[in-house]
Structure formats: structure tokens, C-alpha cells
Amino acid sequence: MMFRFISSFYSKLMLAVVVCFILAGGLLLGLAHQSSQQYQNEIEQKLHLQLAEHLVYESQLFKDGELDPKAIKQAFHSMMILGPSFEFYILDTAGKVVTYSADPSKIKRRQLDLKPIRDFIDGSRAMPIIGDDPRSPSRSKIFSVAEIREGNSLKGYLYIIIGGEIYDSVAELLQSSHIMKLSMLGLLFILGFSLLVVFLIFGLLTKPLRRLAKDIDQFQHVGLEQTANIAGHWQNNSHDEVQKLGAAFSDMATTIKGQYQKVKDTDQLRRELISYVSHDLRTPLASLQGYLETWQLKHRDLSPEEGEQLIKVALSSARKTSSLVEQLFELAHLDSDQATINEESVAIAELAQDVIQKLELAAQKKQVVMSVEPQDPSLVACADIQRIERVFTNLLENSIRHCSEGDEIKVTIDQEEQGNKLAITVSDTGTGIPADDLPHIFDAHYRAANRAKDKSSHGGLGLAIAKRIVQLHRSSISVESTLGEGTRFCFTLDKPM
Image (cartoon, rainbow, N blue to C red; front, top):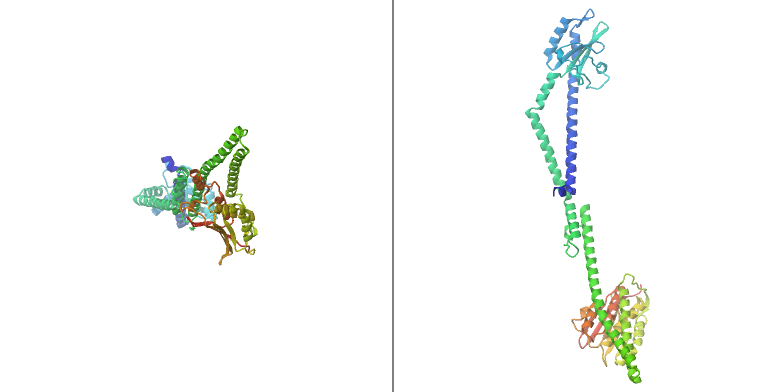
């Protein structure tokens, strides 16, 4: 559980912020301390810039080329009055400590570097200038220095350490004081409060990312069928990039789910269609096989009329099987992505009349009258002539099957008052279609299911093919029917621009 928390993006972000705060805080504290120390040293050194020079001027430390112990003792006594934080040393011209105002056991370094002393006297460097501390083998401190001369001869230097050991001990006491502790606690509180505010801000900023990660995890593990609707979580018109990303993922998930459901439904329909069409194929094939086997076994004993009747029935079954297979291939092609149409200007009335003439023999057998109104060659549509001829053929054949002696089939073509379209109607006065079947007559799997249940049902897929062709022409087909009164199929086609 702990590892999972640490591995999350939010925890990594917070850990990075904490590390950055600690590093930045440490650097700022170090920089502040260093700057404060440098500033304090600069102020102290500038305040006591001429201290050594003033003491040298007031005291005669050399007499006849030698140090005057009495004068030095008097000078050191006077110097101590200035304050216990100063340490006084007299150096020779080579930087060697000659005498001092300290316990001899505390002197750790007797040879000092002259370069900082010369820089101080020349004023060639910016302050603070630090020099060697005789009481430490490595420590450096600010100082004040002046040349000791007898006449024009340089005899040595008066070297004053500003802020000696007593000053250091007092500073250490101040650092451990209650005020310093309160200051440190205040600083820590400010850092902690700042971290808390940053945590809250980062938490709000990363909340959409955590929600998106949750949605993706749900989408991955729960499955498409049980995926909840996540579209309401995200704002597609937001300027927030995470919101846009979430909205894009939501749209993608919805699209994938819809496509998955479509594929699932299509696969189910395909299974049903194959099942039902297999039944339709099995019936004429069994009939074909049965009649041919009967003819093979008994053709020597059958009369010519009986043999011809067997062959006629077998041929009819073969034609039904061939027609159904062709329709299946045609419907499959129309449903594929490769289905295209070659549009051209077509005289719709003439095309409908040609189809009527092609089906005239079947209509005459049932004594059904077919006509086109108006027979106007100027009624032109933009369509694929072969595809639309197929639509007329399927609709008219369907009407002929549902008509009886004396019924009438009419193809009507009208120009729509608004829009650039032709409205085409194929109507008949036949038996009509039951109301329960009307919503499904264009569904191939529904018709196949009915054929499996109803042996007298027609085995074609003509209406499904007609619907798909009309859809390829950017239109739709509708049907109206009343039992005992007839049926009307309607669709539209675009006129040439």
C-alpha cells in the first residue's frame, strides 16, 4: 500500500516539492546566514576602520628602535578599556607576532599572512577583508591594522582582531537563546505552512489527472459492456488541457463502446441471418436433391410427363437457391465499405417503365395492372441507373406477390415543392402487410426469422437490398400499409445540379 502511494504521480510530485523546499530552504538559510555574517563583518570593520591607526597615533610604541614595554603595557591597558571583544597584536615587518594582549597558551599561530594587511592599508579591496587569527591555526577574522613607524622607518604593525573569542562566545550564547529558537520555529512554521498550501494547490491541480487515471483504469478492467458513462465528468469546451484530454478520452471511449456494440449486434445478426438463410437454402436444396434422386431411380419407369414434372420442380428449387445466394452476395457487398455508386442523370419515368415491361409477364399471369404517372421524360434524377433499376425491380416484384386478380400497381413521380429532389412512390392495392411486421420488413434477419417460422413466407431479401441502395443515394425509404387495402413505398432522389 505504501509503495503504491509512493509510486503515484501526486506523491512523486509532492516528494519532489518537499525535496526542493528542503534544498531551497537550506540554501536560503545558508545564503542568509552568510550574507548576514558578511554584512555584519563589513559594518564592524568599517566602524573600526581607523581604530588601529588612532591607537598608533596616540601611543609611542617604539623607542630608540626597540619596543617600549612600558608604553606597550599602557597602550594595551587603554585598548582593553575599549571593549573585551578586541584582541591586540604587534607584528614585525615580516608578519611575525612580537607581542600580544592574550594568554600565551592561546596563541596557535605566530606567523600571519601580510597580503590581507597590505590590502587593508592600501584600500585595494572591498570590505570586509579577513585576516589570520593568531588564536586558531586556520580561522580568519575581520581586523583593523595600522603601520608602526619611527620616523620614516617601518617597524611593524598594530593588528587588532575585531570580535575575538569573547565575542564568539557571546554570539554562540545568542544563537542558543530563546529568541533564536522562536525565530527558527517561526521559520519552520512558515516553511511547513507553505508546503501545506503547495500540497493543497497541487492536489487540486492533479485531481483531474487522478480522475482521468481512474476512468482509464475502469475502462481497461471493467470491460466495454459494463463501462459507466463518463462523459459528464469532462468539459469539452474548457481551456484546461486536462479537461480537454478527459473529454477526448470520453469521446473515444463512447465511440469504441458504440463500435463494439455495433460489431456485437452485427455479429449477432450475422449469426441469425446465417442460421435462417441456411434453413432457406436447406429446403430448396433438399427438394432439388430429392426430386433428382427420384428421377434417377425411377426415370425408366416414369412417363415423359412425370419425368418432366420432376425436372421442372427440381429446376424451380435450383433457381430459388441461386436467387437467394445471389441476393446474399449482393446484400453483403452493399453493406461493405467498398460499396459505391456511379451517379449520372437518369430519366426516372422511362427507367420505371422499362422495369414494368420487364415484369409484365409476371403481372399478366396474376392479371395485375402496372403503370407509371406521369410518363414525363423530363423528370431526371442523379442516380446509379443499375442500382435504382434494382430498387424498382425489388419493389414491383414485392407488390406483384401481394396482389391478386384485378389489383393495380402504380409508380408515381413528383417534384418536391421545396428542395431539389424527386419523390417516388410505388403503391399497390394488394393484401397489405400486418402492422406488427411493418417496422421490420427491411431487416434481413427479421425477414429470415419469419421465413424460418412461416414456410409460406417469401424467401427473398429484396426489400433489405432496396433499402441499402436508397441509403447509398443519401436518402431513406418508408412504407405505409393497411391489411386488405394495399401498400405504399416512398423514397426520394436528388435532381441534377
